[in-house]
Structures are given as structure tokens and as C-alpha cells.
Image (cartoon, rainbow, N blue to C red; front, side):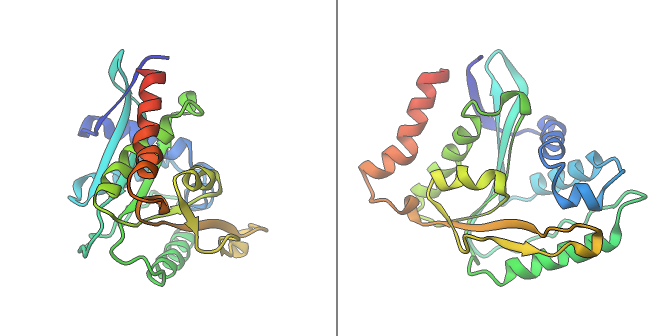
Amino acid sequence: MSEILLRPATPEDLPAIAAYGVTNSSDMPIYSIGLAGCDSFPVSLARTKHFFSQPYYHFTVAVLSSSPSTVVGYICAKDGGELVEVPFKPDLPEGANKEFFGYFLGKSEAHKNALPIQGLPELEMLDVSPEYQRKGIGKLLVAEMLKGVDERGERCFVHSSGMGKGLYEQFGWKAFEEKGWEIDLSRFGEEKPYVTWDMVREVRGGVDVGKGTEENVGGFLRRMEKKYG
């Protein structure tokens, strides 16, 4: 595999980022219920552009050294601190389930506002091209993000799907509730609730400053550089 390089995202990268967001999230209720039968890419692109335009969100992309414009993965992180956020209000396409969006987004916002995470930095989004999954790129992106978090001595929050939970646990995130948070979707024809996990990583992953921290993040980055560099 070509060497993997990390760099800050540019506006030209946003369509690829938005496309991976749709491809890798097709089973999420936002897409499977809210946008079922619709062209969901414009909504994903608008959301990506919204986050990219805010000064407290930061996108890093993984690209191929042989093709620096080819994005194979990305991560979006949000700064910690007291921020005045500009909420994303999607312009829903014709045929979108507006009742679902009102219900799902309302429940999600109320749930998050009740969590003890105010002021924490967040891992907002992480996706890797299906073609390049299981090659360590997701880990590389997370480790790169955590370098800054650990340098600042911050805790960090992530709201995870079942697919990402194991990866985040490798870096020290722990769920508030192991059974996760359930949102009832029976009114929209779903027999099972949708389950996600609210996870917090303690300062430096809960390890001592020094050797443990270096192995946790810096050591991992060096191993990945040897493998792909």
C-alpha cells in the first residue's frame, strides 16, 4: 500500500469526506429512516461544509503519498472550552421524513445536554474509505488527534456507534453506561431501539505522564510510520 500521509483538510476535500459519511453510515437512522429513498449526499455535504466553516472544528485527512489529493479517511475534532456553537439546520430534500428528524434530533440534543461533558473537546466524526479499512488508518487518525488533546492535558468525549466503540476503547475511552443509550424507534417501524455509547477518555487515557503516555499515542504513531512510511 502507498504511504499514508496526514494533512489538514482543504475545501476541495469536502465532497470526498461527505461521501464517506454517507457510505459508512447507511445503517444509521438518519439515513435509513430520515432520508430513506432520498439523495442523502447533499445533506451530508452541507453538514460537512457547516462544520468546516466553524473555527472550533478541525478536519484532518489521510491521503496517499502517490496521490496527495486522494482522501482515504478523515477525522473531525471539536475544541474544548466555552463555545458559542452555530447549530446545523439541514435543508431536507423532498421526501425526507421530517417527523423523524424532529423526533430523533430533539431526543439526541436533550440527551447530550444532560451529560456531564460541558467544555470537553470532542471527536466528532471519523470515517475511512471502505477500500482502505482495517489497515490502521482509523487508528492513525485518532492517535494524531489525541496528540494535541494529551499535550493540553484534556479529557475528551466521543458519541460512538457500536462499530466504533472497540476502537475508542483501545485509546482509553470508557462508556458512561456499558449497555449504551437507547432511542426508541418503534413509531417509525423499527422493532429494536437504536443504541449508541457516550464515552469519555480521561487525561492522557488514564495513564501516567511519561512512558505510558508516549507508548499510548506517540509510540503508536512511530510504529505506524515504520509500517507505512
